[in-house]
Each structure stands twice: as structure tokens, then as C-alpha cells.
Image 1 (tube, rainbow, N blue to C red):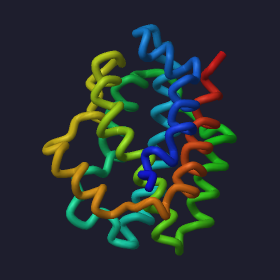
Image 2 (spheres, rainbow, N blue to C red):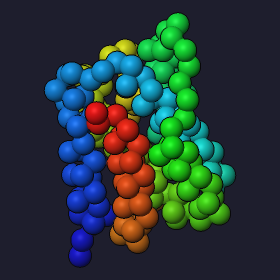
Image 3 (tube, rainbow, N blue to C red):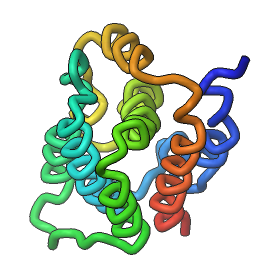
Length: 176
């Protein structure tokens, strides 16, 4: 039997192969692009975490929530530059999350993709990105991973791949 990780591996590899993410791993990210990306993530996480809270999906793993940390990082990097605006892929993702707001299993698939990625990949990214990177600072990572794993199963694979598609579309904006 396959695991959720195995069933989403192709999309995960596609996301990691995006030039914008490659620029991060090469320690060559454009700070303005990254700042804008944080702004986009902030709005996605705010909506996603609101609905996850509505369904008590964070029970026992409350410390995994990231929207406040993303906002701190965005404000730090924005400085005195003009504020960012939402782009079309972000608006599409937010609209999609609103459309599944009454389906906790689908919301959980998006939490899995976003938040587990933050727990794992974020630890590497934090060393390569500008700023304080509060986004990737977690207390008790092992406990959070265990808590999320207890809330997921392979039935989330199809929706997790949808989450990856939305995330890939958000990343592609910064690939130039």
C-alpha cells in the first residue's frame, strides 16, 4: 500500500523543480520576489488556517499555524517599500479554499501539503533565505509531525495533489 507521501511525490518533485525554488536552494533568491511570495502565502495561510480552526483540525498541533510568523517575516522584509498586491494564482487558490470550506478532509489535505512542507523543507530553506525566518521556526517539530500524521491518510491524496497544483501555480509567478 502506498503512503500519502508516495501518492504526492510527483507533484512534490514538480514544485521543487521550479526555478524560483531552485534560486532559493542556490542562495540566490531575489529578496523582492521572496517578499512578495511571503505576502501571497500570508493570505493563503490566513484563509486556510481560519477554516482549519473552524473544523478543529489543529487540535493538538496548534503550534503548527504559520500566518502570524509569515506576517512578521513579510513586514521585516518589506521595510519602507510599497505594500504588495495579490496575484491571480493566489486569488485562485484562496477562492478554491473558500469553495471547500465545508469539507474538512479537503482542508486537511491542504494543511498537510503546506504545513508539513514548512516543517520539513522549511528547515533547509530558513538557512538560505533573507530575514529572521520566523515562518520556519517551530517548537517541538517531532510532536507536530506526529500530530499531523495522526490526522492524515491516503484518502487525502487527490486533494493533496490539488494543493500542490495551486502551490506550483503560485511559485511559477516568480520563475522569470
